[in-house]
Amino acid sequence: MFPGISPRDLKRMLKRMGIKVEELSDVREVNILLKDKKIVISSPQIVVMKTGEQTIYQIIGIPREEALEESKEEEIEVSEEDIEFIVSQTGVSKEEARKALIRTGGDIAEAILLLQGEK
Image (cartoon, rainbow, N blue to C red; front, side, top):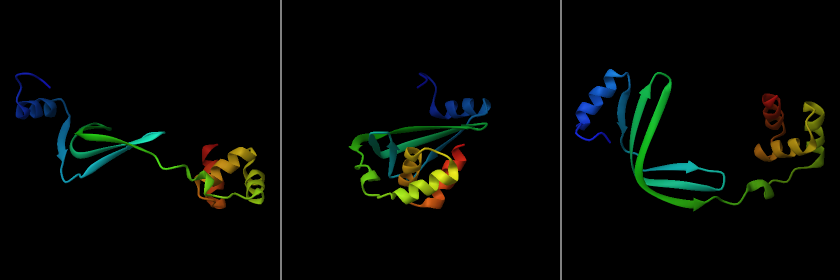
């Protein structure tokens, strides 16, 4: 990373700049979920750098990509009564109510709270 600087000197320099550096051990794998796929990094070496309120994770390992499972939207059946009830309670559109019910696994109370939290 910095030619001619030993890891020990680099740690000291970062410490003087207010950056705390530590290494996470015993991590078996790291999963990064993207919209359309999942990246799994096995045998990772993880360095954590903290400064103030910010934290930086540096991950080095063997990556592989995996397709995400099919959407669970088809598995959850949402009744029109539930949608109408949520619309009457929150004032959102039917489509927004349907999406909230799907996101919460059909839980009406949780869907209402979710929609009210987004306002």
